[in-house]
Amino acid sequence: MLFGIDKVTKYHMDAPLYVTTFAFVFNKDKYNEMSPRQKKAIDDNCNTEAAGRVAGPWGKFEDAGIDKVKAERGQEVYKLTPEQTAAWKKAAEPLEKEWADGVKKAGVDPDVAMKDLRASLAKYNGLAQ
Image 1 (spheres, rainbow, N blue to C red):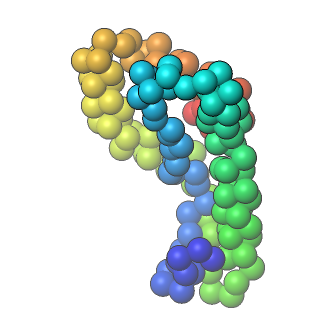
Image 2 (tube, rainbow, N blue to C red):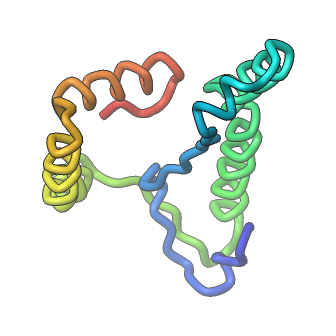
Image 3 (tube, rainbow, N blue to C red):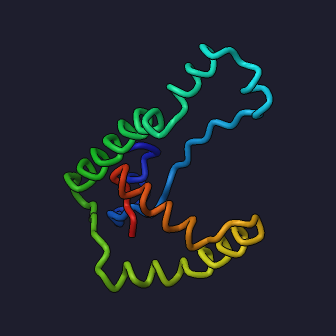
């Protein structure tokens, strides 16, 4: 297991409660100064598909870790019940409101942004709950 978490705890919640963000940020003016060949190299390798090439193996590694822990003696891996999932979602409501307030300040409709995010997650086989 990565980080040796199985050495310090025996209870493991099997729930996707984290996210990893991949961002490649460019100064727009510098990007526009690039040759078409350079832009193509950036565009072909800095996109959702490229992020998936990095994240895919990581996800498989994580899944294998869960299976490894399940097979170890003295380890308990459990899934959340619907009630527990609802409690986690309720606990996250203030964070989502804070996010929405920030989005509004940036001049974007948070409902539209969330709808677009959920559509993108569904398209790329992410969790869109």
